[in-house]
Each structure stands twice: as C-alpha cells, then as structure tokens.
Length: 434
Ligand SMILES: [Zn+2]
Image (tube, rainbow, N blue to C red):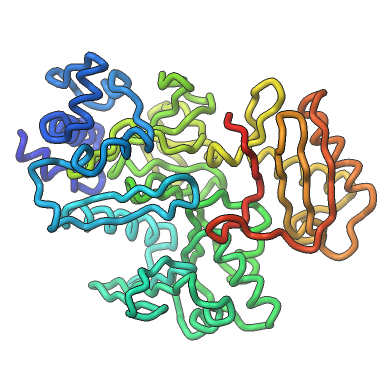
C-alpha cells in the first residue's frame, strides 16, 4: 500500500481515491520526516494515524509562507533525503519573500509534465509542440539570454526578461511558437511594441498567461496582436499548475487534480462553503521532499459547488468560479470589505459603457492604477487613449465613491504608469490587507 501510494502520486488523471491515497502518503511522510509539520501538528493536537484523505484536510492547521520559512531549510525538508541531489526552484519574490521549493528529480519531472500537459491541452493538442516563454527568468550564468531546451516532442525557448524590449521582440520574431507563454505584464509590453513597430507577430495556437491577474484590456490586446485564444493559468512554484482556465468559460478555472487540492478558507483557516470568496489554501499531492500542506497562497478566490456533473469542456473535479487575485491586489473599504481587482475593472467598464464606449480598454483607457493610501482615499491614475471624454472622470469618481459613503477618490490623467518593484506594473497598490 505504501509503495503503491509512493508511485501513485505521479499518476496523471487521478481519481478521487487516487488523490486520497496520494494525500495520505504525503501527510504521513511529512509527519515522519519533516520537523516543521511534526511540530506544528503535534502543537495542534492532530494525529495523522487515522488520516483518510481530502475530507480530513481541514483538521490540519493552515500554514503561511512566513511560518514555513521561519525554521530554515532543515526544518521544512524531508530529513532522510540527501540535499545535493535535489532540484530547486525559487519564486520571483515580487510578491513577498521568495521561497525556494525543493524536489527530487521524479517530483520535478512530474511537475513539468503536468505544466506541459495543461498548456498542450489548452492549445488544442499541437504535436510536436514549441513553447516560447517570454520575459523568462534565466539565471545570469553566461549561458545567454535566449535558451533552448529540447525534450522528446517538446521544444522550449526562454527569452530573458533582462534583454532590452527591442531584443525580446527580435528574438520572438524569429520563432514559430505553437504556444506563447509568460506573465501578462511581459507579454503586454512585447505585444504593444510589435504593434507600435508594425512587426508581423508570430501566430501561436494559444497565448497562455500566468503569474498575475489577467486584466481584460491585456487579454484583448494579446488576442488581437497574436490572433489566437488567450488562456490564463493559475501556476505557482510551490505546486506547478494549480488550475487552468476553462476553454468554454472565461474567468472559470479548473483545478489540476493531479497536482493539488484547493480549499477556500476564512481568516481563521476554517473552510468556507462553495460560492463564498476567501483565502486560497493549496495542498501539493506529489512533493514529499518539501511538503506543501494546507499552504496559504496569499491569493483569494471562490470554489464552485460540486454537483457531480462534468463541465461542458469535460472537466470533472474542483473548479474555481473566480480567481480574484493577490491579497494585496485588493482595495479595502472603510468597513473592511475587500474589493477585487476584477470589480474595479467592472467599474471602469461601466463608466465607459454609459458613454457609449463598448471596448473601454482599447478605446478609452490604455492603462490605469488605483493607489489606496488610506482606508478612505483612492488615487486613480489613468493613461487615456486619444482624447478621453471629459464626463469619464466624473462617472468614475461616482462609481468608485458608490462603493462606500466615506470613500473619497481623485482621478488624474497621466502619460504613463511607472513600473514598481521587480518591473511589474500593478493596477492596484494598497498598503492595507483584507
Ligand atoms: Zn470547463
């Protein structure tokens, strides 16, 4: 049974009982060999002896990144594995402290396989497949700023984010990707530059974004420039692919049941019913080297009710009806309510539509940023396309102020929005946490 579960965690197309068996194995290994989990579960008075699977997950405490990092590497790694044989991947650290994720080779290969498989499926199963990752992070070790990796039937080309924009555009121009991937910010810059220079862009089968909230204006720009579907993924170094956007329903994400289990919890870590928005907590189903168990991602979202029926795209299993963004992407109202970046987008869209502008993020608002400097004040900076209608400011202030009677807003037209830390252009900047 034990040996079976050890291998089962690398199965593609896991059933519910496969997921339960994998989880039992991961939890028992974590308790036996990882000091951090043994200590925190002992402190919480949890016994893993009778742990059955997904239904028992809420008995375990929720873990934050800071808690997992606090005790150092020896505290969070399986003490029986030789460290020099492990593969390490680090998060970028643009949102909080970076975390290094450790895996054995089989764990790393499985993670990669699930990522490629999700992309391959989203692009309509091209064969063989060339994936181009734009704005990639390549370690500065002299191997160059454009890296090519060949695997059986898969070629991946990484274009470094350190290259000047013009050279990134040049590198992409000479390639014929079946899939173009990257974070929305990187792809947006490249797409805008190609359009500005009137360069004929490549025609991939799909553009796959990940790593930041995909703003509707950016989705529209990418679809127009690259002439293909734009599919958003919820990926994280701690798991790999957590969820992918349903091909039939924009904004709905199917959880990758081969890699993880997703829960939505309240501030105290208790599970919330389907349909309620809360903190996203993930549990990795295959990594026993550095287990990720009930780990708070720092993101917010909402799970769909499970009625046993398959989605029109064929997916069975968990679905996120909304992926609302990072905790710090939210505007927090004076009464503590958190307003998601998507709702802010909607307020902009509504203001434009009431002026008869149907395609607001290409026709009226090129870019924007909302800065919350106190619980009751927002500063909105807008980069307008062409000549913005004068009434737009008034309508926007009205829409934003309607969120709460004590909320005051100022709207400024600006020429451009400066990138923040790590070169990311954040649309919502707030020092308040929901
Ligand atoms: Zn679907």
